[in-house]
Figure (cartoon, rainbow, N blue to C red):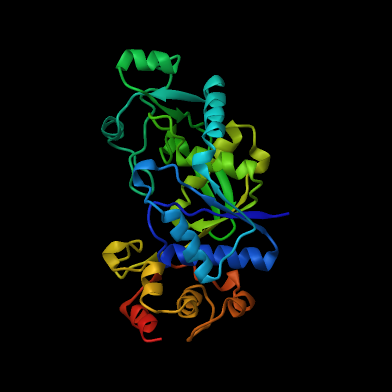
Length: 315
């Protein structure tokens, strides 16, 4: 059976942009008969908002989205991530790093990733034989980085097409798989989870496209290359300034619209238009399920305009 996952992070409320991605994921799954697992990605402790997990589930249900298994919380699975980190350290595929964020950024003065983030140049690679040695030499608790291979990596994204990443051109760099406080980093945790949960289809925003080669490297390092899923990276919803939808564009939270009296049918009508479904009115989840076709989904980013906001409020 094909399996996908909905993976909200309780660091904030669902807004129209990520709601569109979740809805498309759900539509694809229900049309094709995939199993849906709900996973709460709650490892980013300081940024976790109280009750945001419950709010996310309420928002999803209100929109018409359900799931077959879960919720499963990453915070309950830390032993699995620790075991994976130990395995990578034992194989010398990962190493302790005592660089602070500022030091890492300064060391990467020239090369930068596609998203503008500094690419770590491997300052601590091969420097310490163990976590204890790194701690003793620096007086700091080290983070753990995965040593990236130099060979180029290619894969076919099911929506964006052929992708090629070449680490020798400093597109990726050695990345953190466990933070200095021992918390597993996103790139490691999602691979461990997706592999164990049998995830075969991942549908997410294009802002995570450059996470895919990193995660594929983790699959290979953990001898799980046969479990690498198919990826679909969808264009984002942005504001009129071209930036990803956020607070600066106004309150686009689903809970805000619900509390304002706007119906889920109305929200779905807008999301349907943004998803290539001809729609100029409210729409039921059953109608949307019949009409959605991934082949009609625009490849360009969708711009939320003042007219869209007015259309929602005039329903």
